[in-house]
Image (cartoon, rainbow, N blue to C red; front, top):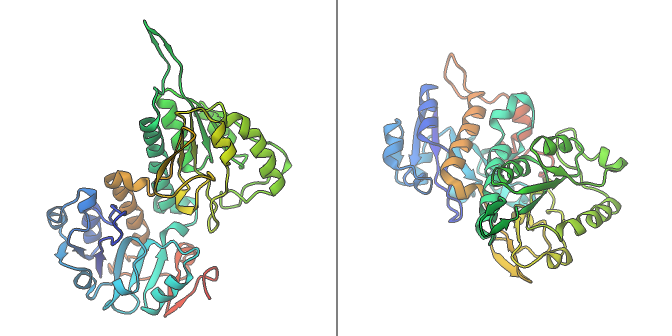
Length: 376
């Protein structure tokens, strides 16, 4: 069993799919590990660190992939990047399948078996494999740190001889993993925190962290969560009522952090241009949904802009801004999943196609896209 750890090709992706810690674990499970030279450099992991853990360092992707059974990446590799790999290579990565049918088809034609880590079901057994949660947790933390850096005033209340400095008012929109971490971080920094979400189960979570919950709590609100724990897309009527409730609230806030995403859909627009212009100069909006178009109508993905004195931060890959920590957690997610496919007795890699985790995450097999959501 051979595992190839491939370097990322996107300049904006500093994470890596394995760490010396997980390399050691894979080797103890019977694997040979080949790491593409420089793969961990942006995460402050040197080739020497991997070599010390027992990995072989290969100059390029082709060398690392030679005879490999498994390939690890953060982002989906292109078909070209897998050139020369053997048939049925199992590729584990964040595949971003929604809206990328052509890329998936090309990947399938290489003969690779592609697993989308972000499609891991949110069940107890798979908690240690949940890439979305591990990375969103860091993104939520980083969003508050970035907001504090951009905000021209202090977060906590300060009582000084020169007078009292009021605490910053922070509003979190979307209370998933990222939102909850944002609430906790903002509270630690001394801010007055409010939060909103369409899922009723989040109200207790928000209040347990010392924040105040804000939502239109009607009948639709009570049914606004899927069996998998994700938010449903709300009706136009509910969205209008919620917008009216939040509009006056946003006008009084110093910092707004938006985290709302619905799998496979563009990010819902929660903050209108009018809401932005109602905020006082010096206020900050951090849009964690920028990669999917943004929750704020004025967000420009990858840019920080100023609109009527309000800073709108459309940063991409916030988890990647903490590359060392993000890589460590992501690598452990991969290890936990792949470990379920390695027989303890024979130390052979074998995919159990009846496993619910495999069924949920497998995108391609035998030259075709097998997930019906993305098959042509």
